[in-house]
Image 1 (cartoon, rainbow, N blue to C red):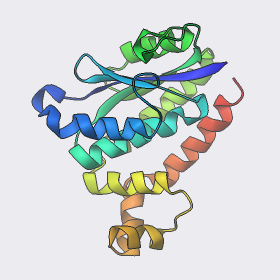
Image 2 (cartoon, rainbow, N blue to C red; image 1 turned 120 degrees about the vertical axis):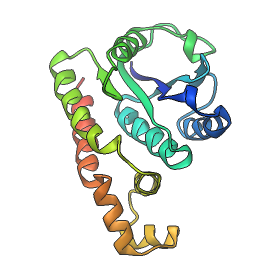
Image 3 (tube, rainbow, N blue to C red; image 1 turned 135 degrees about the horizontal axis):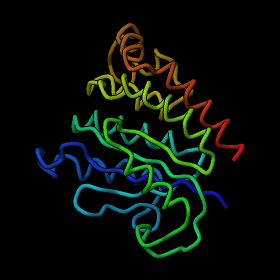
Amino acid sequence: MKTAILTGDMVNSQNSDPDKWVDVLKTVLNVFGNAPTDWELYRGDSFQLETQPEKALYAALMIKAHLKFQSDLDVRIAIGIGEKTYNAEKITASNGTAFINSGHSFEQLKKNNLAIKTEDSDLDNTLNLMFQLASVTIDNWTSTVAELIELALTYPDYNQQQIAKRLQTTQSNVSQGLKRGGFDELSKLLAYYKSQISTL
């Protein structure tokens, strides 16, 4: 049974007050499961999350958007897809190729803040190139744009007028913000990702 492990840490967390982001991070991780079986914080500013392979990129984008919006901080995330061969009470004590792939992918994160490792190196190369290109936009989200992206990801059936009503702004502002955030391109990336991951 394939699973996805996200390994992440906060960017420049040593320069910010943990009170500003710890609860924010916990809130968004709770969307995807329960601690400590599905997610866990460790080493102060790091975390692991287990989710379904098809949902892993969506989860990564939601975590990034939520943190940018609520705390104006960024996060590095490595996705590992593979097996889970040892199931512990705490996610950080579990094991399998998904965890190994996530760890290897995390070690490769230097200039990039998002990467993936599966058991298909050709797919990894394609997706990682796409992630790098997407990161040019994602890494520059303002908190306002991140709020729009998070809302649009959370409520995919909402049109721009519904988003505008929820945020008490104009449809024009929503349109411009989603465009600046690259939402159309991210939606295409998410669709491509799901179609490829489902073939593994």
